[in-house]
Image (cartoon, rainbow, N blue to C red; front, side, top):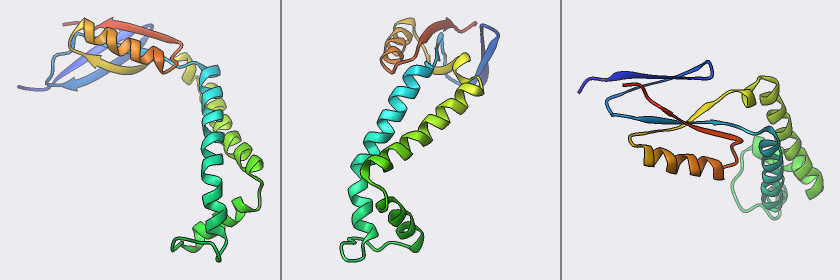
Length: 145
């Protein structure tokens, strides 16, 4: 079966997919800046707090458990010089800057494809899954035949 190009247009945006499969619907999503900022920064800080003890241990030659290269040791030593709260804030600030850059680029004003579906009921399931992931806008658009 030859590939065919599917094209869907929604609110001035065009989405395409080349496939041999038959798709009847596409689930489009628009991200929420506040949600992305809050979950991204909190998630980054939480992850940093989990990883911090490892970095501190690996920075110290007396407690190092793994064979580390010089670049890793330098990074771990820099992290170990911070408190756990300072490190969590630093990591969180990096994510905050990335989310702010996405906002400045207009990423939160555009739709993206969450998934292509071969049936409406499957598209509805995908849309529900997208809503649980915190997207502020979720739409199901039929794929023209």
